[in-house]
Length: 108
Image (cartoon, rainbow, N blue to C red):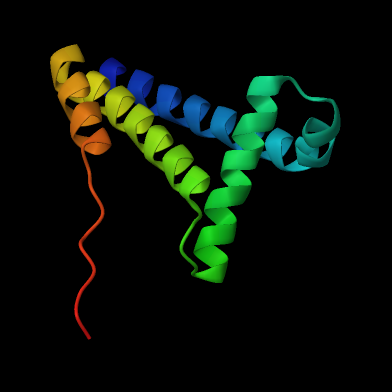
């Protein structure tokens, strides 16, 4: 195994274990964050609850929930596009995510 491959493997394992640890801490601390967490953490937990509730119930979200999901999708598109293709592409993807309009109602 070459030194570059070994370093890549060790870095991947370290990142995977760090992600696992963060997930374990998040799952263990969700009730505590709801009560005593900072505003940003509370809003992230509320967003996560919204995503889980919409996915589990299969219902249409309300207008405020829809805006929250749209904004979080734009942030994810901005971050992902910036990492993959640079800041210009990230900005373009975020703008495209925000420009998404709902489909018009269909006649029955």
